[in-house]
Length: 113
Image (cartoon, rainbow, N blue to C red; front, side, top):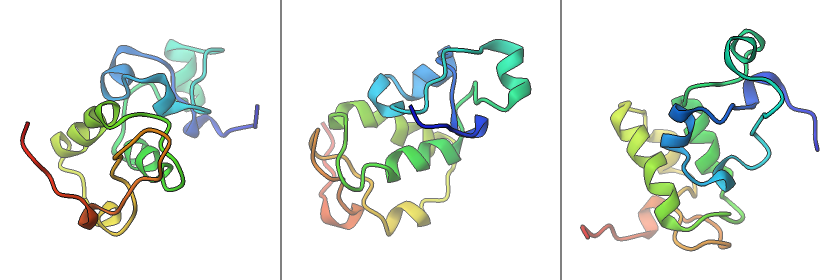
């Protein structure tokens, strides 16, 4: 495994799992060695952040490890947080199929289920 800065790692807390329900969303970022107050003291994320959610979506530029349904919670979190969508608007970040590269938001049509 590659070395990571603590701020790039996350603990599998309930809060983290609510936004990233599929473990593949956080592949290479999960930290099982430390938890709780010690993890927080080191700077390991124990709660989801807009920055983390954005980085996860942008990491799908070449291939998404998850199906679209798994990314829905991430999009919802960003919306709930009132995130600035400008960075994502100009980047491939919409998951359309597992294993495929994410696409630009302008390349998809949104439908209500």
